[in-house]
Image 1 (spheres, rainbow, N blue to C red):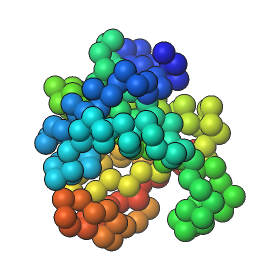
Image 2 (cartoon, rainbow, N blue to C red):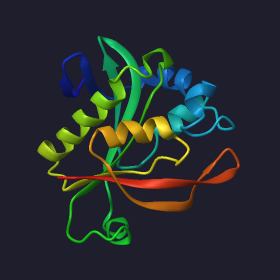
Image 3 (cartoon, rainbow, N blue to C red):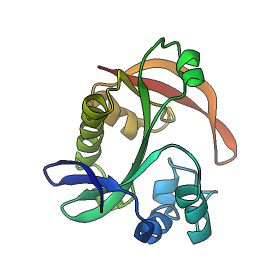
Image 4 (tube, helix red, strand yellow):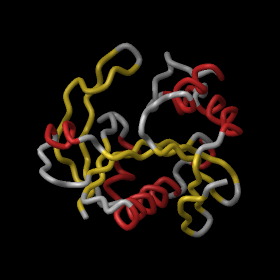
Length: 178
């Protein structure tokens, strides 16, 4: 197990192949899929293996644990120069994150806020991030409230940014500036 960071009962460790059944469980739950990937896009084991283990993407993929129980997933990645310029940043080290709590019994308990704050601190201290960005769907008000509570500010609306359940959704570009 490779532990990346910890804050009290919260631990974030690198994804391991043994986690494939957790991801399959979470990403086939309609409550989780409502905002992450879409209810029309459930994951089976083959899809989990393809997306999370056989992909050549540069994300650092992690499992979130709370009080010694695996409860969610987070990934973070350094934005490529082209995307940084497109967003209007110049000569900055910008990271993006995507996350979800897959165990719905852990929703609305402040764990997401703890996770985001701790991850932002890790990216600033260890990856020397100047900014951290996210792009939640505008309709995901619970997540947006969490991110704002963590110090993220709205930069702009990203119109028709994400195809979700057959329709393009507007998203918010949110940033945390160091």
